[in-house]
Image (cartoon, rainbow, N blue to C red; front, side, top):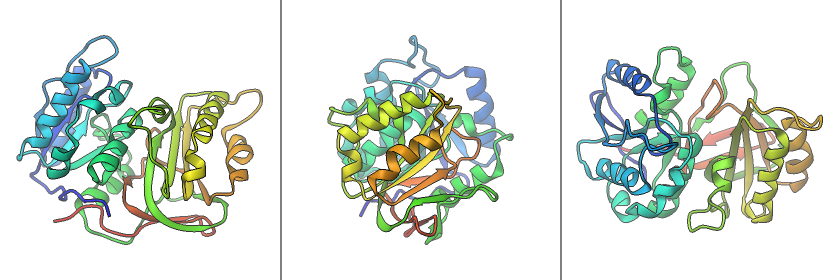
Length: 307
């Protein structure tokens, strides 16, 4: 069973890091003010405002920033400013036993999900596909904050992984399985195949989502995962949105799922509002989840944090 981090409470301290692409300083500063207005203290990593082309610093620099937050006893949560590209580059430079000895709430989506899954695989730590610094603004839907704080600040369990009202989950291949849930951004995982940090789907529920890719490119990535055995190994599949993904050759994202994933015969739920979409339900990576595709229901079976 994966280790849970201590829950986040009012007055706790959030460490901000930029682990992939650079963030506009004015955007970061505005979002930090929102965090502080919520009763949280903020500590900035050295590379938060870093800018080295399309990265916020070298792999080693960004990894050091992350590890400083890990070993700082005053830091309760590590919040990446954004995703972008390049997060996989820090993975060889992290100290996974030290991370395991210093569990903290760590959250994010997009390219950050390669980190979240590596921390589950190598540090046995529950992490959260959820908000990043860029999302802490008052125009963010209340649903997103509600889902985030339910996961990181309460011991409520069992609890649904759910969409906002009026946006149903869809069960496409019936079945009922219970397993740890892993996954996140499809493009990011393709970049780790063939490395020590490729996603381990054996006996797991696999969650995937994508953004701003044409459907033929999504097909290419799904097929690469299939050839790598990731669908053969998994216990069930959850497909999130493909926000901003255009049709290709007259084929939609939904049709691709019907043609490619349904025939695999794995219990399958589609339509989860998470990550790049407007509505972002929180998914606790590494937590035990029941996927009941017959009822189109996802249930977190245990608390995702601890006192």
